[in-house]
Length: 250
Ligand SMILES: [Mn+2]
Image 1 (cartoon, helix red, strand yellow):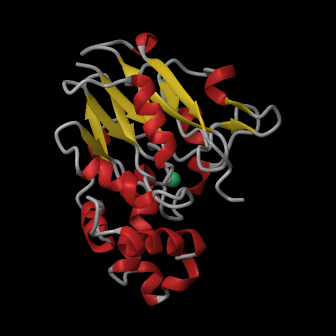
Image 2 (cartoon, protein in one colour):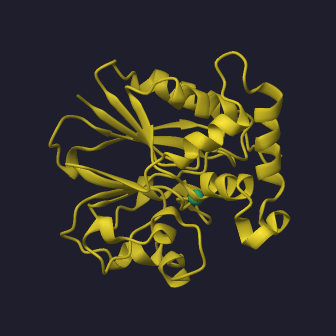
């Protein structure tokens, strides 16, 4: 059995289909998404619908974007002031569900938000820890990590998510012990702004860190890590990417 871990899709269903065509998972394989499934791209309902409709092969952890939809839907965002943080990209994604959900196998907005509530904060498999945004490097037991750190939603410990000016990686990455279990994570737009190259193409600062949000929704790539077999070591993980059809901000 292979495991494929896919970074932040952000509503880019066209690119997700291209990536799935490229990696060609069998029905025995497993596909794990790193959250931030929705917002920005044109196909949020299609992305969520794909995962919901393949429960035997697909699963996902929760990202900060799913959490915003949950909090806004349940009126718990910013203590009853949803409009301040529930901005344009969220409203547009919700509208995609209202326009197309409930037909052709696509979830309604309510079904999608209920689905988001059942997503795990993190997943730990024998080969790696899978998390949307990050880990507190001082806490070894992933079960004791704070939800706002693993999902990237929340203002506490902002310093862990400051980008290092040399590598462009989050601060927590550089403090993550070199002998700790491999981490595959998203949330960080892993593109070197000067060279317009993805971090994973030019730098691997650590053998045990896999930043795979390669900015698909803004014209970058959608990236998957392939764990080729049970018990594979990180040096045998393989990266697969497809180029975004466009920058969906424009
Ligand atoms: Mn994120």
